[in-house]
Length: 358
Ligand SMILES: Cc1cc2nc3c(=O)[nH]c(=O)nc-3n(C[C@H](O)[C@H](O)[C@H](O)COP(=O)(O)OP(=O)(O)OC[C@H]3O[C@@H](n4cnc5c(N)ncnc54)[C@H](O)[C@@H]3O)c2cc1C
Image 1 (cartoon, helix red, strand yellow):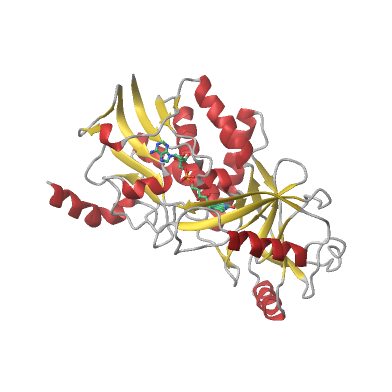
Image 2: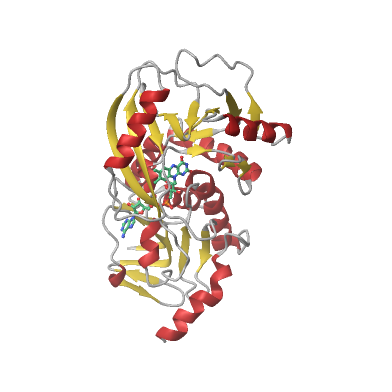
């Protein structure tokens, strides 16, 4: 088999990369092992323009949000699904201090942080003593619909191989790659944390971060908003089901779900929520985060047949479409990638390894 590109991984990064290559009528094969606990398969899909306790506007928010809305709407039309919805966050302040901090951001005219006029609106649904504010616009990507729908499209065009990629079977030359009986012009790694143990990219400053989530049945909670009190409570596509999470652990024993998280969230829901709820499932995964919190996109500075789209950290849903589009512009037209995301910034780090190995 001969293709223009071999893509490893069909999480949100591999999905967007293959989407834009298909738009350019390029041939490709995606190899993906359908890992049910990969971050893309357990994420809420929230695209939130602010971050942290101080509600700081995220990097490139204006550009990323409008690009995400357009691109998910377009892929949704193409697949006949709803890939993205607009759902603002109602932020319930956990303390008077947090209320003051939030209102300061409102006074500073932070573009995404707003006061909420109907302070008592949510009394029938939640216990909250210190009021609430609104973050808008916020989007939610329906990953549980989008990823299988795109996978089906790949299968129908014979562009998907469901198996585990084995790095030992890969042979690289200056202008092509060979993997078993597959020949390709270039190989593009979208395999999340697995790239951190890959011969070509293991020097990149990956910093995996563990996150857990509970899936909860709350039939009497209207899915009009995403609700936040420390954690996010976000509606899933299936009526009555909600996603609640997450934590951010830099140190962890393994990637498995923990009893501590389940107990912590059960207690939070018990204190916060008025309608009854039932825990349905519990997942955890390692986010492909990076030390300087910026993605890795581009071609290896010393192996031009090898590329990467990775390091999406906590924000894969907004970063992946934007940088997949940029990577395709680089591959086909030589256009540069935004400097902060370009793996060219690690040319020295990646070069050292090449010299040592040669
Ligand atoms: C609990 C939690 C909540 C999150 N919530 C959000 C959120 O609300 N919004 C947001 O934007 N981001 C969120 N994230 C982050 C988001 O999930 C990631 O940024 C994103 O999913 C990374 O996507 P990716 O495609 O780069 O990598 P991955 O999701 O890791 O995908 C890699 C793919 O490659 C495949 N693969 C890996 N190795 C191999 C191999 N050797 N052979 C074959 N296939 C392979 C895997 O099966 C997988 O399909 C969350 C993450 C977690 C853990």
